[in-house]
Each structure stands twice: as structure tokens, then as C-alpha cells.
Length: 273
Length: 337
Image 1 (tube, rainbow over the protein chains, first blue to last red):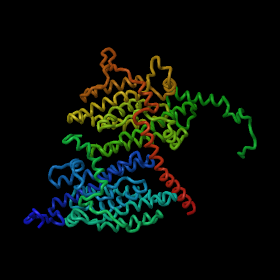
Image 2 (image 1 turned 30 degrees about the vertical axis):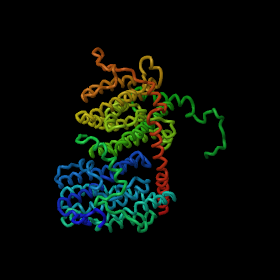
Image 3 (image 1 turned 60 degrees about the vertical axis):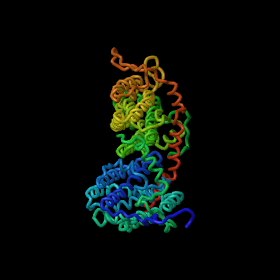
Image 4 (image 1 turned 90 degrees about the vertical axis):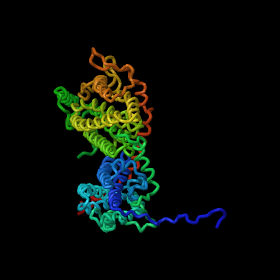
């Protein structure tokens, strides 16, 4: 024993994991995973407005962002209802801390160039297309309702990304190189979209949701087809890959994103806007 | 054969349509349309000065829509609620749409958008100077809707009856959407007026900063003694302008002051008072030195606005070039097939 210290009877051994098991929390967490993906990506797309390559594209990216924001609002509202602690969409968006956000890392990454954005949108919209197609029959009626509307929206988002990936991939040598670089840049973030997590397992078992891993084949097939037509190649398996977003473990970019998203709302506690 | 194998003297007409007779006929036709208050359409002959004036005005208007996206876009990521964020994104998107119809209206006069954008980027064409002021708080988003869109609509409603058809039609649609934006802006401020002390202070501060720049949006004085300066008289004769700057400014003040009273705020003009006799609100002198200074480039955001626009354009050049190359490649392939 070291001098002067007696640790007998002190418990410092903690659990390796802290699994959440109650249905309300799992259901809420699943809804947050859907809503946060949409909210956080809408936030990044909002940054594009006035910075896009042409005015039509300012409008198009704004449109995609608005669709996602609409999905987020419905899903966060529903998450608040299921949680039952009186939190509305704004309490969910503005007053949660970073560790409570359940989005994937892909959507929180800072804005890159337009090629990188189209790579991100192609993957994300392809994922959401498979996702919402499956969620149309969710046992959670709000989720089913959102999915019915959103599946048409994300069909357009996916097509928009596809049209640009084709043009950039099969455009000029510069655009080809930059589009390929964009695909490489987002690739480490793609696998997380198809990764199962505890809340999704609960949701899939209870007919509320779907296991992300079951969506991957459809997503990969769609993207692979677009890349082939665009004369681009699917990036190699990346050396590292993002993980942890669904459990609230994010990349460093997330804190800054939330600081910007939340600062006015948090500076005026209790205010109505 | 159309080769240059024969050369007329430089000053001689080559055919009758190059004679003064024809020019005179065109002018009479144009004057007739103006006289009967009909619309001039792109197919109609029009005096060169009329065409140039319209290009300048429509381009400046289009540029204002595009540059105006910046001060509002500045708050998209920070809007205090998701509903406000959605409304603001939709609004900025509408401004982009207005820019597009206006560039299309200008294109009917024989210029193209790329040429006009180039003039904007190189400072050869202007945009509304109001957008050279910064949006510093959330209340500024409301103030832009209330005052800036309000002033813009006051200017634009008469343009719905402008003599040039494509511009008049674009204005009908633009005014409808702007009116919606103005209401949204007022509603932002109305909500602040009933909010916390900090929100009310934010509202007052925004009104203090935006009031005078909004009055400047109508342009310098152009009635009475000043009527002989500037373009007002000619533009009125051409049916491009229907009211003087001063008339529009007074109408705006008369319409807006009661709205400020409802918000429970003051406006930063000690001379502002109701004139029983005239039935109008009297107001103090606009600081025209500030107006000219900002117009000439020395405003808080002039350099920033253009730098942002130019950066977006230059950063996007490779994307636009790729779209052109792709279209050409695929058009060629379709021809082969």
C-alpha cells in the first residue's frame, strides 16, 4: 500500500457499456437518429445558399435543405411526444447537447467543395430513399406519414445528386478529378449509414423501424451504378471509418455546428420567436 | 453570297431600313405604343436609349435580389427556431428565383446573364445599396422584411404597369412574393415586441439602424427643383417610372409609421410628426452624404458582398464548365445514335 492511502472498499470499477433498455428511450432514440440526420444535414445545406456554383443551385440546395428540415421537424416533434417530457421540436433541436444528438458523422462534416457535396448527397439521399421506402409501413403512424411524403422528396434529392455526379464525372478532366476526390473524401463516413445500433434493433423488432444493415445492398447498388455511368470508380475500402454517431459520439466539427445552430435560442432562455 | 467582296462607303446606308426614314417610322411606332399605354414587347422596335435604360434597371434589380440573399442568408444557420429557419430558407430561395426571372427579363433585351454577372462582379453595374449594411442580430432579419421589402414593394408595385412587358410581368409575381416576405418580417418583429426585454431591445436597435437606409432606397430627391436632374423625367415619359422618388418615399413613410406605433417602438427621427393639414407624416432630412458614400463603395459590407459573390462564381466555374462539356458530349453522342 502506498503511503497514507487506503482504497479498500472504494468502487471505481464501472460497466464497459451503459446499454439503454427501456422501450421509451429506445423508441425516442430511434426517432432522434432519423430526425437528427435530417436536421444536421439541413444545417450544412443551409450554409450553401449564396455560395453555390450557380443561382439555380442555390435554389436546389436550399430546396433539399428545406425538405430535410421539414422531415426533421416532424420527427423531432414525435420524439418529444414519445419521450413524454414535454420537449417540442425546438427544445430538441436547440437545447440538447452534443452527446444527445444521434446523427451519423457524414452529415455533420464541414462543407467541402461542390463535388464533395454531391458525393455526400448521393450517398445520403440513396440511403434515405431505401430507408423511407421501408418506413412507409412503420407501426409508428407519424413515421409512416413522414416516410410517405419524404420518399418522394428524397427521390428528387437522389436524382439531383445523380445528375451532378454524371456531369462532373463525365464532364472535363478537372471535374472528373475533383468529383473522384469528393467521393474519396466522404467514403470513410459511408459505412456508418449501414450500421445497426441498439435503438434500430429495438425499432426493427417492434415494426417501428428498419435495420440499417438491410438497406446497404440497395444503397450500394444504386451508387455503384451511378459511378459507373459517370466514369468514376468506387473508392477502395478506407483505412479508417467513422463510427459512434448513433450513440452520440461525434466528430469535432459537431460542437461548432451546434454552437451556431443553438446560440440565439440559448442566449434567450424561455423566449418565443 | 454574303462575303465582303464589295464595300459601301462607311456612312452610306446599304438599304432603306438603314435610312432616317425607317428610324423615324420605328420611333413613331414606339411613341404610339407609349402614348396608348400599351406594353412594349421584345419583338417591338424600341429606341436604343430605352433598351439600355431597361437593361441597366432590370440588371440592377436582378443583382439586388442575388446580393440581397447574403445579409439574410447570414442568419439561416442561426435562426432561433426551426420554423423560422424554414421560413428564412424559403425566403432566400425566393430571392434567388426573383433574380432568375429578372435576368430572364433582361435577356429579352439582347444581353445574357453571364455578361450581366460579369458587370456586377467587376463593379460596372450596381445593386441596391441597402444590402451594404450588415445583419447583426436576429431582429435585423425581421427589419429587412418589414422595412427593406416594404420599401422595395413600394417601388415595385408601379413597375407592374411598366411599359416593358416582360419586366412588368416579372414584377407582378415578384411583388406577390415580396408582400408575403414583408408580412413575415413584420411578424418576426411583432413577436419580438411581445417578448422579453432583451428581445424588445433587439427590435428597437434594428429599427434604429434600418430606418434611414430604407428611406434611402427610394433614391435621391427628384421632385420640385430636383426634377431636372437625374433620369426621372425621361423614365416617366417612357412609362418605366410612374411616381417620383419623393412621392414613393412619402407613401412609404405614411404606410410604415403606424406599423411602428403598433410595434411600440420609436423611429430615429426627431422631426417625425403627423401633419394634420397635409394628412401625411412629416419627416427629417435623409443623410444623402451617407447615401452617396455607401453607393460609391464606402459602406460596411460593399467589399464583402462582392467578394462573396465573386468567390462563389469562381469556385463554381469548374462545375459550370463540366455541365457544358457534358451537354456537348452527350449531344454529340445522340447525333451519332
